[in-house]
Length: 115
Image (cartoon, rainbow, N blue to C red; front, side, top):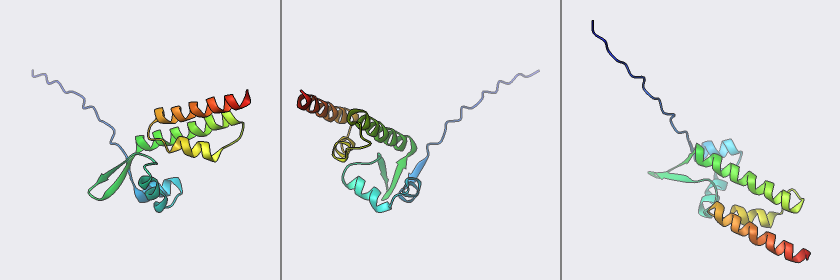
């Protein structure tokens, strides 16, 4: 009697990538808006694959989560739904650390002005 061992293959999820057009449709924005964000160094992380822009699903989710966190923090700190200048400054930072530094600076200035 021959015994064979069959190992189950681990199926890795295939990462989902969006084209510019797919992402623009998903976010309900213009493709030109996405291009403007890229030109300004803002927006979700993207890959340039042979003159074809692709956005990873994970990177998109991270970017959307970050934008929501900034909006929530702005609301919590100011009691308003948005202060465009503060939100724009925080969202324009390349890393969360830079955004946090900007937020701390804002809090210190706000605290000093209340004293």
